[in-house]
Image 1: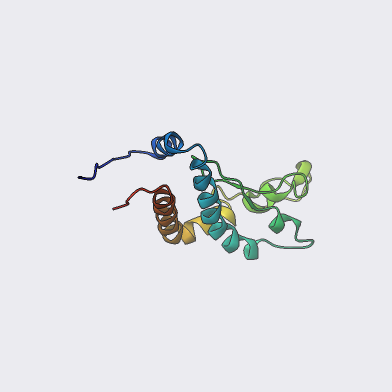
Image 2: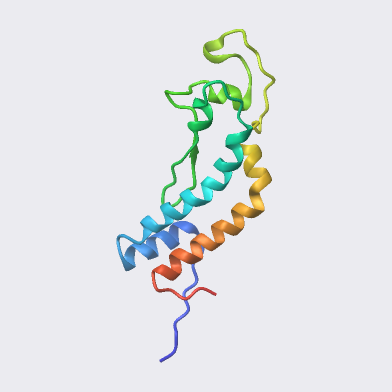
Length: 137
């Protein structure tokens, strides 16, 4: 019996195909994406200045089955955007910091680690496909 070839264009189509095979398979994408996001987080954390460490600890991987996300700041470190991008101080206090459109920590780490992130993402997607019983070429 010959093997059928399936071509997938796009992550959303891949996630939908996995869901058709088994409703639990797309969860593997979220877990794989969190692992990839941790490459950036692990590089960014030591770059973040610390007094209490709350800003660095606030970096979290929060991916979905179709997107890789890193959250930062939140209620425990609401000043994180100011640390990363600059501008007026937290709550518009006079503590000014030069504004960097691309940020100082998270986006810089992503730019520095982009080849590693891309390779890890490709491995992760291939791993999810193989765990679903698909042959990856």
